[in-house]
Amino acid sequence: MTITLNKKESEEFFYNALCNGLGYVCQYGLQLDYDSAKYKEAKMNWLKKNPGQEACLEDVLMQVLKDGGSLTLVDVEGGDDERHTIYLRDVHEKVSKTDSRRLVDMQTGNDDADTADCILQTVFFNEVIFG
Image (cartoon, rainbow, N blue to C red; front, side, top):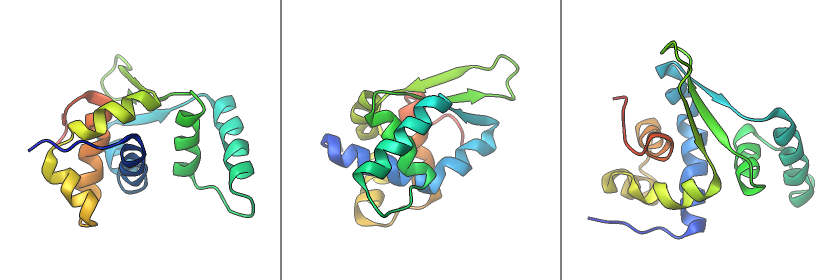
């Protein structure tokens, strides 16, 4: 079964995956990397769009992507610091490539860290590599 998501849905699924699976993915010897100046700028942009609210890490990471920045997973245990960088267009294109069972779980609210992990790996690596 193929599931097609629009841009907004892809962003929502990816955001939820960041919230529920980023720490899980980092257990594989991967580290999230981003430009700290872009992060600060994105945080200010997010706060301007959401007055009176507190920005969490995932809010700002999504804003980094929306502002044209990138996120990178670095393999810090592999010895070669292999890097996998994504942009917002990758979120739009690749979330839908996640196994349909996982996407249905996310859509129906039956998602968990495994669901999030699969979405993040699919977006960053084009496939599920770990687990």
